[in-house]
Image (tube, rainbow, N blue to C red; front, top):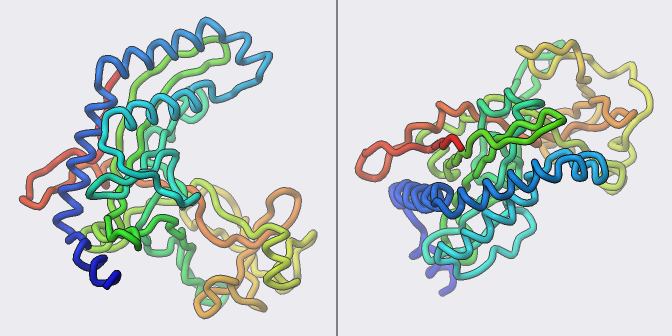
Amino acid sequence: MKKLLILILMKTTDDIRDLEEKYMNKIWDILCNPKFISDLKEMENYIQNNYFELDKNYQIKNKIQLGAERLLNFYIQKTLNVIDVYPSPISSDIAFFTEDALINVDAKTIDLSGNRGDDAYVQFGTHQISFKNKPLFPQNINGSNFKGMHLHPGLPVFEPKTGLPCLSFFAGITYKDDGNSFMISHIKLSCVPNGQIVEEEYNNNIILNYKTYRYLKDNAATKIGSDYVPKNTISQNWIPFRLNPRGRSSNNTWLDTTINDPFFKKINFVLWRFIAKKYHICIGGDTGRIRTHTIQNRKNSKGKTWEGIRRLDI
């Protein structure tokens, strides 16, 4: 009976399209609200007026991150019809249920002084998305067929207990901190499509590349087997290659054909990379990037276009 109820509640792809547009509009209205903007400017003024203390005494590099999360959470809880929290630790900064969706909203802050290039992409972690992308960088390495690097989604396409679709939003605050002063440049809201939409509309292919990767740490590796534990030196059996053939770096990865990937044993061999003064097994992408134009123009169930990324200068 419980399974039948879940099936009844399951939404079609058109339902998800309309829900993503609905909550994109609602969250954007929150960000554009004069009171929200006023509170954000007050936060900017506080940082500027206390810049020396925050920068020197407390050595806070990202001075707006915590405040942005707090502000966003306050206005979402106050404005949207939140009926329950999402209990999973695998989620965005803010995760909650409404009557028709499981919504994840992550606060993203970008410093134009140090990470200007990041503003051209939508960046996300594995715990903030529900779609499965095609593995990146498949290639033949000295006769061995490497099937590519995965990024494992931490969110469900549909929440199992309720059957509600999982929606992912990213509220960005872009600022400039030049080491002497702080100023907010603009705010941005992005909707990364639900896994069912990515499969049907994008053929599971919307990730451009990875900014960071996930590695198998000592404790986890020990539980799998001694062969997977980080090494101090390169084995003569490892084959050096460049993971991203289009990247600028030289050979920075080693293929080990003597053992299989701990999570995809029937698909891939192990990859080793040098990090934290040892060679660790790379188990997948950690931070993914999507070009903004890829998800800019979205369509609802009636074929009408809506903006999947919106920006407002402050």
